[in-house]
Amino acid sequence: QVQLVESGGGLVQAGGSLRLSCAASGSIFSITAMGWYRQAPGKQRELVAGITRAGSTNYADSVKGRFTISRDNAKNTMYLQMNSLKPEDTAVYYCSSRIIRPENWRSGVEDDYWGQGTQVTVSS
Image (cartoon, rainbow, N blue to C red; front, side, top):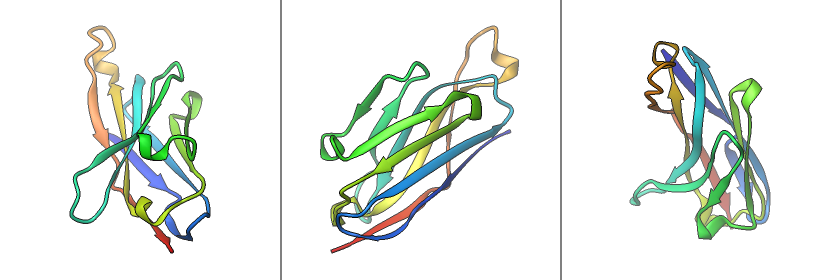
């Protein structure tokens, strides 16, 4: 079994900052891609930022220059530093990881896992 646990969400005023963390644990051989998604009420889930194991990153246009994604491969942990937050950033934020389990180390088969989500609310 693999678990992803997010933390760091909360209520912040516009212009403020939050740092989200996502810790992966359990039956893990390797974590390849990781990413942060968000879903606002009445909207579809969207990719916020992604990062490869080597550290290559990509961001949604709406968060470029404000959010920074990073990861610590030794700790199987990913972070999202969110600065200059806006009310439109309000959403449930989910982490996702593409993981190779030990039994699949030879084949390289990857499985996708999701965290339970953490609420981020930005007040105006």
